[in-house]
Length: 176
Ligand code: 5GP
Ligand code: MG
Ligand code: MG
Image (tube, rainbow, N blue to C red):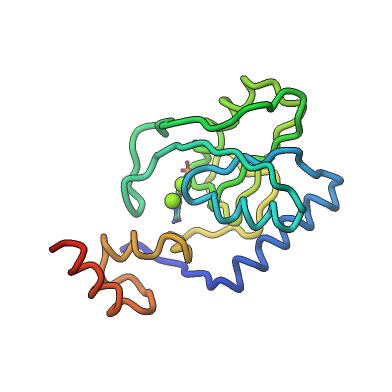
């Protein structure tokens, strides 16, 4: 049985501020943020907002098919980046599990000759082979984020999520 952890929005905000504080204490302010699609988009925007940065780029990469079920390797779908030469780059995702996604994205970003690459996530699993440079918490459960709960509910209708009845109504209409 999969154990879930369902952080509230308040915890995400606290986690983002914690990560940003660690970066600033380190004198690290990126020139460019690279968000990993799609789970990294909201954390990337929140970090960018706290630092006063507008420059966000994206990498579309897919590894997981569902809760705890993954492909053999992360698959790069598209790379939406430019002008990283001699820039300080921060790669952001919501969570690192095996660490393969951060590793693959780091390898792609390296090819654009930035001056520095660091990475940040809100959570990291204890078994990850690559820890991000900045993270909020280590957690050994499947995390259901405010931005991917319906994805989980579609797979497991028993997932511990609020407002499910309303979503099931929507789903019935969607599937008609
Ligand atoms: P990794 O490549 O480190 O194994 O997995 C990282 C990617 O898988 C992240 O981009 C994230 O979207 C997804 N992922 C891994 N673990 C979790 C989890 O516990 N909850 C959610 N929602 N996504 C996860
Ligand atoms: Mg992801
Ligand atoms: Mg995701």
